[in-house]
Image (cartoon, rainbow, N blue to C red):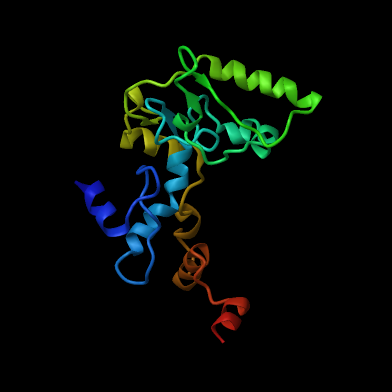
Length: 197
């Protein structure tokens, strides 16, 4: 239900995996804050190819943990169809099906090993009649789990607020509040006062 509400309000990007960015000043503050963390979330997702119509060949992580554009930047630079989907580059007419990659020029000698490596990766990949899926890397069977996401967030990060260093005994409350404001970047420093005019 939430997906339908958000798509109705903000629209969705080309393949329906994400909503569009929230624009405007009123009523979208919460959604803007949630979208700020979207990149972290997508870094912990991978794709399972079905038909290949919703997964970008070069720009989505679908065969391995990294996008092919990042794994093979030299080949991506000479790719003719940088935004093509996996399904766009699959040729069903060639026997059992095969990859039909197009490049804007021939390859240099030093690029041939990269082409061979890419083709070795693609050899085990096939298109099916199922729908494409976005899978959570940390969850069981690719299912998103709040507990797993929270564990990922807290395992790498520093504490959000150094309360033990600020709210201590024998410190004047003025100093504690000043430190608290400074921690959150709310102290009016000279540069912030100049921005205000």
